[in-house]
Amino acid sequence: MLAITTVATLLVASTLSSASPTPLSPSTIPQRRSASVINFHRNTVQADNKVFNAEAARKERLRVKAKYGTINDRVQAASHSTKRALKTVAKPFDIKSKRAGGEGKDPLVDVFNSIDVLYFGPLSVGTPPQETNVDFDTGSSDLVVPLSNCQGNCTAPLFDSSKSTTFKRSNTPFSIQYQDGSGANGTVATDAVTVAGLTVAKQAFGAVDTEFGGFSGPNAGLLGLGFPDNAVSNSKPFFINLVESGGLASNLFSFFMSRGGADGSELCIGCVNSDKFSGDIDYHKLDPSATGGTQLYWNIPSSGFSYDGSQSTVTPTTSFNDTSITTRATGFSAVIDSGTSLIYVSTAAAEELYNQIPGASPAPKDVGDGFYTFPCDAPIGTVSFVFDGKPYAINPQDFNLGALQEGSSDCVGGILGEDLGDNLAIVGDEFMKNWYSVFDHDQLAVGFAKAN
Image (cartoon, rainbow, N blue to C red; front, side, top):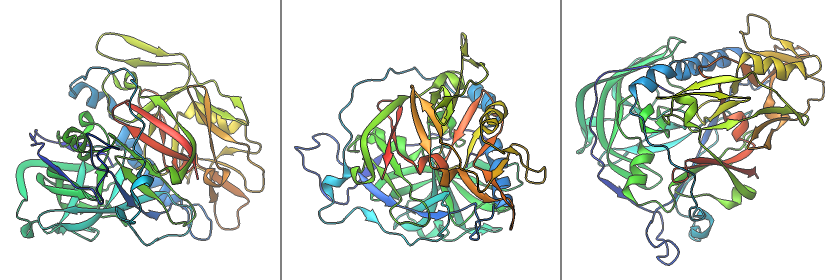
């Protein structure tokens, strides 16, 4: 997740080397070469007995508040980039066309079999490469890797920097701290980093010496897939370095997230996988106005949500940038965040939604502010987010986080009320399990197609 504190700046060389699991036809892709698939482990905030895991949800809520709660500070510190218009680009490269030999896919063993909300997979660091695993997070921009000398409850596998001939450590401090009391400290370093055969030769990352307060989970580290202006290390993110190398088949990445312990979850870098979705991919332009004109997140404007086809009317909000004030007449700006499990909207929007659900009410105070419950046996209507006038529905199975407690007839809803800066909504895995999600750097857009 996103770090809160960092000091100084590191200039990072952008020398890259890219490798593809199988060669691509020059006639198919004349200029760009590489695309790879990585598969995921999964974790859950719902207990195996289908009872709501209040402690895990509370921790995530605090981390989300830390992750998005200091937007103004980041906007003021960031260099304001020039806005780019949505443009016509080539059709994304479909990885399905290069799978004859079954290469380029890293198979993993499932860890949990209930509702899946944390997705992580392998990453290699160093020369020769050492494999660890990371949470792939579109809501942050830094790579965080714990070292073999890491003190605290550090999750293995850890990276032994003494065994890498290309590791270089700086004196630049790197620090992460969340409101739940967890965090990590270290310094910024560089080394070769590889994900699914795609390598950045000198990638900057937070080399972690100390973790505290349960910072890590089943995954050892974190790979942020966001934008440079949101990087705590003040360095270019891994995916941006791949883009600037000119070696990707398409300058995008895409997620498929399965549910309920099913196999097949994957991150496709430089590609989409048409086996994983149905129909066309509909793209929605990013919304930098929500963060002062600086693109920090993969966020897109939404007119709100609908419940059983009834469109919500969210309170008007105000955005800021260098020279003007922009008022959003309705709706919010939705950050599509693969590193967040649930969905967070403003408290007013959450109240409006649950007012439409029969029997819904605020959860007891010991669960936490912003949570709502509803009768477990009540039929729940379709909850959808609306982007450019098109509704994107959430499966009721994903909306229901489980019974409030063992034997309870009330269940907890997966959309929480949390006021985050300029009326941001954080749309996490609960939504992405329903929609194949494409993050397109050339178009500066996020696309969705119905997940298979």
